[in-house]
Length: 441
Image 1 (spheres, rainbow, N blue to C red):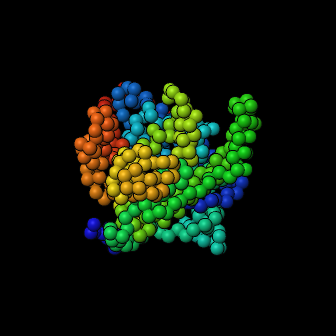
Image 2 (image 1 turned 180 degrees about the vertical axis):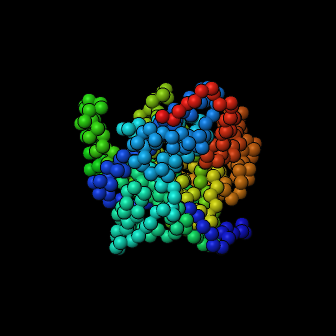
Image 3 (image 1 turned 120 degrees about the vertical axis):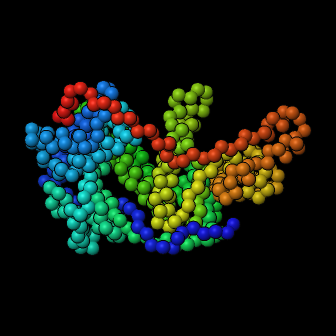
């Protein structure tokens, strides 16, 4: 196939840079206070959205921002947080209600929601590098805050988000980064990717990527902490202390998974013009198996747990994020029969899959790793299209000797893959404002 991807011209993309903050005691108290105020503004604003919807009306950011200004005169504690942070909270709430509807947007609980605040005005943020491993940023009403300079910014800061995760505070900068996309030949730079539970990522060229995200010691500690949590009185001080200890361990595991996905995605998209993935419904494949009847429920539960542990969807997001800077095109194909089709003779037979890792074609005897076979078939589907890759069912039906065999070999036509995100919801029509004033506070 002749063609190329990548314009070779300079461009700019918005990317994120995350660093661990080193807050003082006073700054940590202020950050907790700002997070609580943002949570209160979110909850009151969400209740207002729901009340207007019940009465057939609508409200938006402009009206809520005006009411917030009036409420600051009556409630002095609202003025402790930066105005831009509170206004950004109302903007985020408006976007969430437009996308999902006010009755699907969740409340922000004091216990379940981690404090987070966004500083949208990048021109007010001053970032300096103090030493080799230390930097500092000046935030409104927080002053100069030090952070670990673990990587260069690489661009102009547009916004910042301060959040708490796993007992530590972090700051994520939104950076306008210049990139130069390179032109890559499609004949060379094409790759199929198969996601699994034994090997997390397998490429069509034979490369395999995997990592254990939980150490044996952490697994034992999580087991003991979870048992201890069930023995505590829910809501007590010891219960919350145990829950915080579990959150710290889970935070380390989550960071390892994110690091693995980012590094793997960068290695896969480098020098690749087209990357093909299987269109997997990860949510359905990793949902709870308790409601399914029949035997094998424990096996399904273990499979679903392994899928969640490998982070299949997070890997897809990391690939799409890394592909923005390299110009790599990502295509998703129907995963039907990718593990049963021989990549050499295109013969389809479920018996060719001997085990999880062994594939031996029953027609030509081709032997290869089963995950590599799946990646190669996904690449073939992405290059040739769904119709050209469809297994030759008609020829096999004519070769079948009995009616029962003919019925067994008839294969359904693979459906076209859906997009990563569902269809956009229609924006609710604005009705007449309900009678009476619904104050924000």
